[in-house]
Amino acid sequence: MATKSFGKALLLALILAFVPGCALHKPPVSPTMPIPSPTPILSITPRPRPPQEVTLTFWLPDELFLEGKPGKEQLEAEIRAFELAHPQVKVKVYTKKASGKGGILHLLRSAYEVAPSILPDLVVMDAVEAAGIEESLFQPLDLIPEGLFPFAARPRAIQLAANLDHLVYNTGIITSPPSSFWGILDSGVNLLLFPSGETIAIQYLALGGSFADEQGAPALNEEALAKVLKLWDEGLRVGAISPLSLEVKGQGVAMAGARASDFLASRAKLRQTAFAPLPSAAPIAWGWVVGVITQEPSKKEAAEELIKHLLSPERNRDWALAANLLPVHREAYSGVEDPYLIFLAGLLESAKPAPPPSLLKPLDEALRSVLESKATPEEAAHKATESFR
Image (cartoon, rainbow, N blue to C red; front, side, top):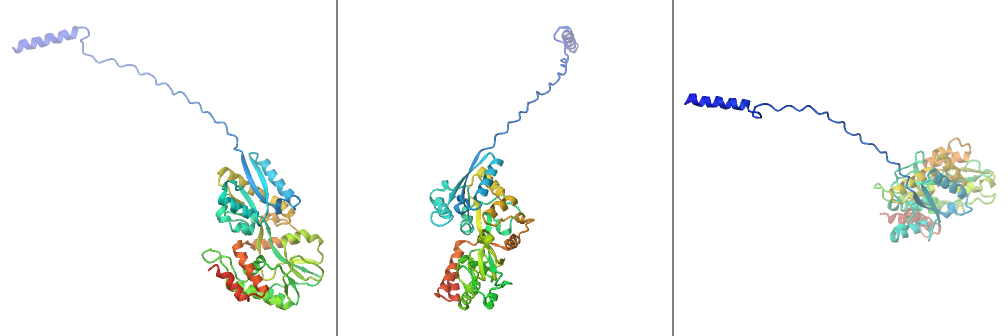
C-alpha cells in the first residue's frame, strides 16, 4: 500500500510539473515606476487694498478757531497739511462755544447721555473742564508724543497749548520783585491780583496743598488753604493786595498778576515792564487739552496721528505762539533767545496739570467769602474742605 501511494504521489507531481499553467512559480516583479514631481503651485501675491478712507469729526473751541482769532489761520493750515500727508483721512472741523451753556462741556455731557452717536471723534477743550471728564469720556491713548513737558502728557488727554500766571512789575517803581507773599506785605507796594479759584490754587499748592488724598481721590488740605486765605485777608487789610483786574493799567501800578496769553498779546505796547514768578505760587498749566472720544480703531489711530502732527516741535511753536499761547513741547523752545520764552519754559518744566472744576469752585467760594467778610479764613477753609471728607 505504501508503494502504491508513493507511486500516485510521484505521478501527480509529474503531471503538475508538465501541465501548462500549473507550474509553481513566483510572480514576476513589476519594474519600479518613477514618481512624478508635484506640480508647483503658483503663488499669487494679492494686490494691496487701497487705504480705508476715514473721516474725523473734530470739535474746536471758538476761542481758538473763530474767524479773526489769533492763530486760527495757522492751526487751520496745520490741519490741512495733515490731510495732504494722510490722503485717506478727512478732517471735518466744527467750531463750538468754548464754555458755559451750549459750550463744549455742556454739549459733550448732553450727547453722552442721550445721543452718543453725535459725539465728535476728538475734541479740544479747556484744560480745567477736561480734567473733570477725561476719565469717563476720553479713550486711553496708544500714541503719546515724546518730548512734552510733564504736565502735558496724560494717559487719556494731551495738552496742545498752555497758559500760565506770573508777575509783571513796573521797573520804574520796583527794581527787585518780592519772592514771597510775606515780602509783599512788608514792601509797602500794592499788588493787583484777580480774585478767583485759579489764582488762589497756585498759592495753595505753593503752601503745601494738594488736589488729591493718599488714595488719589480729589481732596483739599484745610491747613494749607487757611494759610492762603490769611495772606489775602492780611494783604487786603494793610493795602498790599488789591482784588482788581489782571490788566496792568496806568503808570502808578507797581505789580500785578498776569496771564501769559494777555502779556504776549500786549507785550509790544508795554514800557518799563518786566516779569517774574508770582511770589509764593506754584505754576499750574492752564490752556487747551485734546482728547480722543471715538472707539473705532481706524478713527482712533487717525486721531492720534493728527495729535502727533500738531505737537511736532516746530508746528506746536508756530501756531501756539501765533495764538498767544505757550508750546508744550520742550524742543519748541530749543535755540530760543527771547528771555520771556526762556522764563516761561522754566515755569512749564515744573507746572502742574489744571485741577477739575470740582476743586476750583470751593477755592473760589472760600476766597470770596473772606473778601466779602462773610467768614474768617479758618471758617472758609473748613467749609471748602468739608465736602471732600
